Length: 277
Image (cartoon, rainbow, N blue to C red):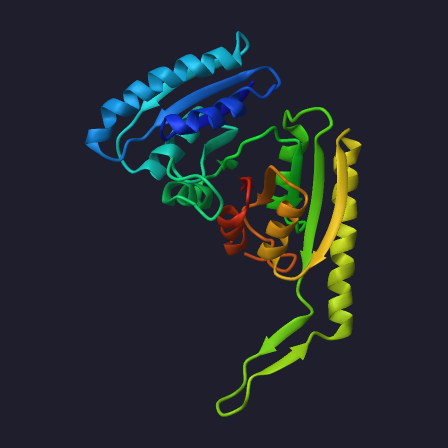
């Protein structure tokens, strides 16, 4: 049974949380609906929202699932992580905008903090939420990226769901900062360096796509070159992706640091984003 922490941040976030709970999780889903009101004046509304949410979630998980609720006061990101540990959650699902205005380019401070600090996979949900049938795995071959791949393979996505495996090689142009008094110069990477990185990206996506295809899922490999964040976001738009999955660290020139890339994709992606630690 999958253990899922669903973070309630207003009535508008319930449809997305329902969609996650309603996925055909093997053995059913054990869900905890958590509210962390930030002000005393919000407690009554949060309590009422939890009661309404419990009724709706119990209807979608059915007899095979379990749904409980919890209302806690204090620092939201810290409370979410504590609840995830107590539940031993397999997934934390929350609204990317913390229940505020929906859309890309809006990453709430709670979602940001949880994605940075959580020890477990974090699914930042962004409307419009559709079936997760067009998924993009951004990979660089590091352990967090491999864990993201394994999470996708095990995920209860619809039959026929397609996975696009993307790796990004560094851009062919690098900037060299001049010493004092010298003009700014642009220098190309050595041809060998650039070709090696491109070849590595191609090899990596073919390898990862083969692993996913061996699990019975459709997979397409795509190597790109340029800014990692920009290329991932462009690929998500181009292929009409409804979920981007990535490791929490890495993805900076085929290996690197949470990274800033993961946070930037969380902020700019036009769809939901899964970050795996």
